[in-house]
Length: 445
Image 1 (cartoon, rainbow, N blue to C red):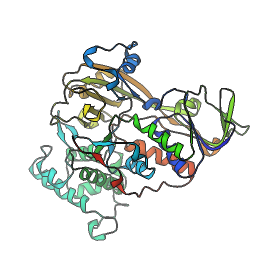
Image 2 (cartoon, rainbow, N blue to C red):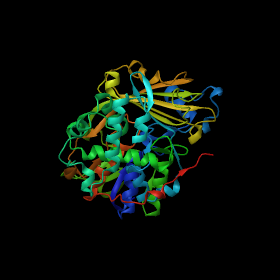
Image 3 (cartoon, rainbow, N blue to C red):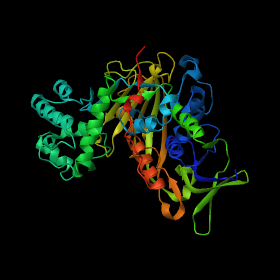
Image 4 (cartoon, one colour):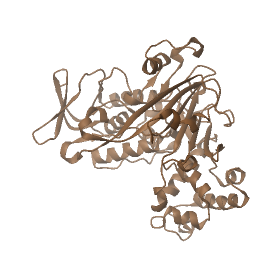
């Protein structure tokens, strides 16, 4: 352990593993340590006995739920956009060869007490019960504009410079009503609040295009994909990748104490009396608790069911977004469901998560609108965890800390954090222009 490394990464959560892999591939010498004896940190994957132990205090779940080892329950479940940032990172690092993906069946949005498929193209807009006849026509025109938009083709710009006009301006040009804007902004562009409306429209249009392009990739019912056996496969895939490029992984290392010099700069990490030296430390908030601040709390329910979510066309895997305005809340609510079709549960069983940014101290009541969509549940576990953000000055202490995982059930915010951290650590942006065909999804059996 007495070698010197460019970067020491602490914690094997998804963000840390992605960063460790990307840094290794791009020539940095990386040592990756975790105080736990398992991969994944907060974003680990549990079998049924482990889930019972964590939430019920014993490891004796009812036999009716089937074999414990047939469950791979991700503690931070998030779907991947087929053309989104994470898939590009996976291809860039060639981790795709260690993983098998499968398309997710459905993408839905909650509107006026019901759930509807999210329309993402002009054809779907015309069929969607989310809008009346005239609104459908307006939405169709807007979707055609988005589909045809090309940054390099001035004709497609409709005389609007998207780096200057706001998203609100573009929407009002097409005369879309608030109800339509609600599902487009939150279920298609995947914004978590409405601040985007007053920002330049370029980001908004790009996000809509990624959704539509992702949807077209696998001709499925959603733009999302998910690994077979769940996300627990990801950290291990990145560990393999890092090893190929000369990185070192060490699990079960107690303490992992970051060492600072007299100027407050991190220079190494000590565990079991040995110190490994480094130029930079990358970690999750739990390794440097005095350098982070609490910024919120996620409330969630984890449910085991014996049926798909009602009104989702019997989808074996699905995301439902409940926009904040529909619930009279300040933050959106998310429903994630996956099943035996992605090998995360035994045949006939479904795992559903309902999550949101907590606005009260009562998750049971707060999560009710999402839980009510699920129908009959066999078992339900409630959980809440605090969200932290770094509060340090990285140039002064050489410590790069990830933010905690938010309530979203897709990867877009997570990838945003990873890419921003990569730029801060290396001073360069990660090149994500890749051949997307390198990540294919497994066909239905």
